[in-house]
Length: 152
Ligand SMILES: CCCCCCCC(=O)SCCNC(=O)CCNC(=O)[C@H](O)C(C)(C)COP(=O)(O)OP(=O)(O)OC[C@H]1O[C@@H](n2cnc3c(N)ncnc32)[C@H](O)[C@@H]1OP(=O)(O)O
Image (tube, rainbow, N blue to C red; front, side):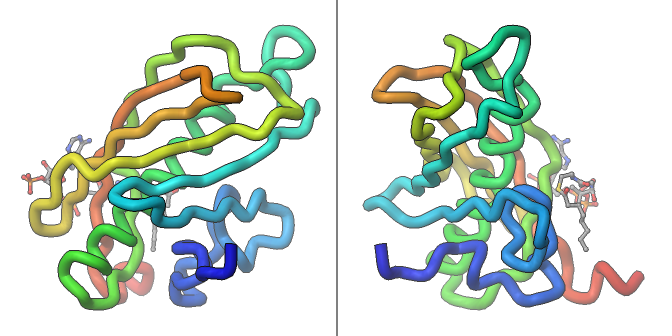
């Protein structure tokens, strides 16, 4: 894919997230893109992120993947809809239903769909699948931080 990932378009001051910040040396550097009206992020988890037994991902990592992709989706939706540069979205609320174990060492696909855009708030519906099988689904309320919030 040659297009720039959403996270790679964040301003430097917003690019330090452990999950997706391009400037976080130790982070996972998740990348999210448009796929038609949906967004997609692909990630293969190392077995060191296993949960209760080997070969399956722990739930916090599943939530992390959905969280970061949700924030990036909100950013992209705002940038596309309002056609102005968005700052950065943070998670106000994240709901995850775990439907089936998610494997490590297998490419996972996280998908986002815009449910609502209202003012600074974007609600994103999310799924996480492995080899076409739904492993988790949920939704996130993302809120855009005002400019210069980090200075206050
Ligand atoms: C500089 C960057 C610093 C950010 C570092 C954090 C980065 C992350 O790790 S993100 C993950 C963790 N998330 C956080 O740390 C966020 C902490 N929370 C906050 O900062 C604030 O509560 C924040 C920004 C989410 C919302 O507060 P505020 O800016 O006052 O927004 P507020 O006006 O109350 O709400 C905006 C809209 O979101 C909705 N909303 C806010 N919180 C929630 C919630 N928990 N559930 C559902 N909806 C919510 C409100 O109802 C409102 O919607 P509407 O316009 O329809 O009435």
